[in-house]
Image 1 (tube, rainbow, N blue to C red):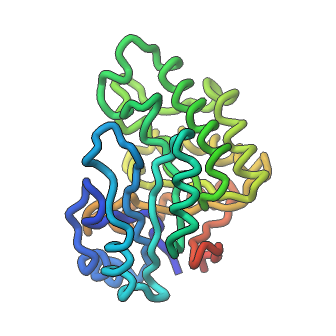
Image 2: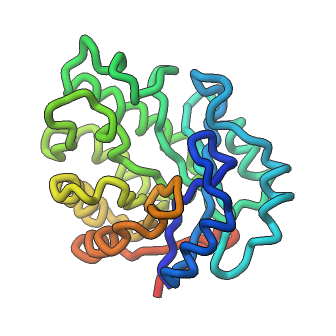
Length: 256
């Protein structure tokens, strides 16, 4: 079964989707889903991207079944790695995504992050931060949306040209491959063919470095986006000879 392994409902600050809506949409597509609510500890906007984990499991555990698993998307910050590790051990997550949303304690989606910086400077800092975080977050199951910065960069061409950043990207991919961790193919931007093709060399390089596993996620925040463009993500995985997986009780399961 195909699993959309990156879905946000109303426990995430930026989603109003009810879990019943997510379940109905997934059923109509005949796919499984993993709910992965945002948890960014000490986020620059204190009221954003945090929720009560006890309430989350109390309310959603009754929905857990072979087609619906419960996870989390953790914002990775080096100084918060141990707090995040404790959280991961304390709660019965099926799946943990580790993502970089904050660099040097600043959000990277506002235009101000890019002012006074060249693309190379901004992206180098993003990837340097990602590498440091991946080193500390050895307990996450997959690295989320490596191209997150492309969504918001105030640039004429925000895409990642691998040859320009390979010295920053290769250490990240090498570490993930050595540990047997997965990397996510996030299909949110896959309406844009340029986005897909710019990511192809990155995932191909992950395979060359010994990586095997990818998770597939739409990053849906509303019902209409659940399962969206997953076919393109699966095609990219096949081109790169990477095996799509999903997680149950933190154990990888092959998609069939």
